[in-house]
Image (cartoon, rainbow, N blue to C red; front, side):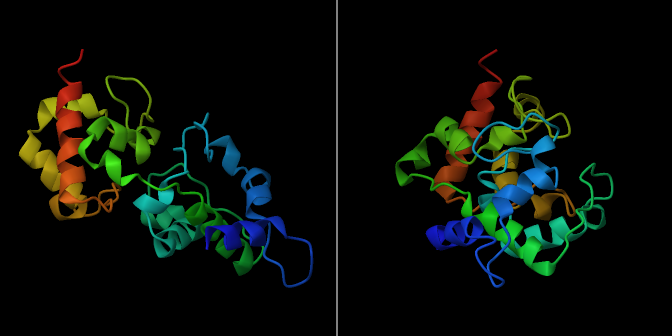
Length: 188
């Protein structure tokens, strides 16, 4: 499916029925000013390579239609999509960008942190992340492992309306990430 989506995105302009070139739109619509795919973003938005693990296509569609409706204080602008096909192509592009998470990483919280690109949003001891998201070293000071595990299992259950996504983590992955988050407070 990823190859098919990439092929559709690259073949834009080949015919009247071809999908818009989402990779090109990513630059033309100014997404690149705040975000990036495959490299750290230089703007205020997170890097989006692994966004497909954080959000599903329906959520991305709603977000890219009207970000302020979903998060009133966001600086993300409403994108002027020319056609519904442009929006669909962008959602497909973002979903297709995600890289697999190796099963071997399940017991290594630091590696999972990197694999899921948690640092695209969250700093650790003021390194990385974006200022609008909590620093995980501070979170480790304020919350114990039991709370962090429940939070990662379902942030919406603990704080309805929070912007944090629920990740598709196994219990082993979740416990490994919690152990890593707790450990970062001790590494200062």
